[in-house]
Length: 152
Length: 327
Image: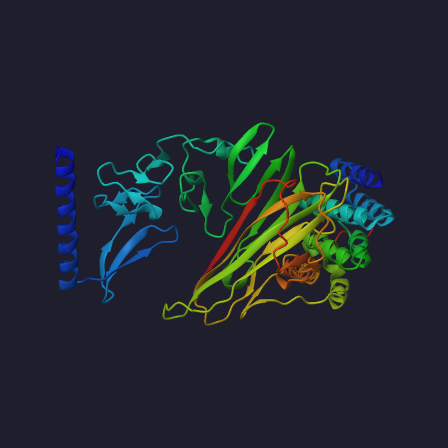
């Protein structure tokens, strides 16, 4: 039931055009952390990532440092699972996530590299939290510097 | 001896004479011709043993030959051309290069994940530079998924098709859904990456697991064009677990097909992932599935030993195929 309530909150929070995107994301992160089970938290992080992926450029540009820090705090939730989904969510925000770069660099030290060699060729593993963190760092560093709005 | 038998014997004798004649001529003057194709498989040039170009063929976007008459044999996108009609035979249907359309209706039932799939005579998603049609039933392209999937949902039955995008297969109302994204040039040597996220169309009361049987094969050539032999291949099974009362695998639902790095001496080649996946309702993963058991599966539960799962309560399989080529 808790998970359904979380989905409802996430859907409602992001659907309203007038809704403050920072407040919505922050409350979603709090809801995710409040979930009693790892399954519920994983589902919440999946939903958060999907909703962030659906944000328009104008909404993404409204995301501030404080909100990015909230998302980045998921890097410490449930080990690799949190690192996996938080990285994906931060990557979606591109240069807006620049303030989270040190946390991503810290997170990468906590993940095991998975070498998927096929002879002399290296393939990407199907799921690798470390690869997602590396992708996020690349996505954030690869975007041009963007002016962040003043802290609310 | 009746007339029919007589005709048969005459034809057999004539055939034998032709074969002998052919063998004699071949022995007398054997010529070697190399056929070169473009990215879609259309033969665009022929060269002799010395490397001289002896014939070039230019095609309009939908396969009409420019400047020369259509010849019988392999033609546009590798399909057999018919010189007498100018049509391209694509196994399931004939395609008219002049019209850029098939002459008969698509044998595949329309599906809802692409509006274009309702164009029942349309060739290659109306995008002949990017896609080709291997058998008259589906649009495929370089670095795109290209698969037919078995499905039965709410009375719909038959074969669906897709490239990248959303696709699904089902049984008893439950559908296994794959949402796929292709990231161009994300891999080594400009190859593409396919990221797929699995989900179910509805909540699974008992939960279970999505299990994928996947094989990876490699074909590569050195700078001189010589095929590199002894390349490795692998086959493994990886799983995504679905908790009771959920429709989304947790903690992960992702799969990734991507080449991170290639040996420098592999000048040209391709990597192919192929296999199939099913959702097994109520399945508890066998103990052979271990998180990180197979490196290619990453942190997913995986095994390199065939689990020989019963399909009695599984969805029909979704065919999985992805191929990248370089350069």
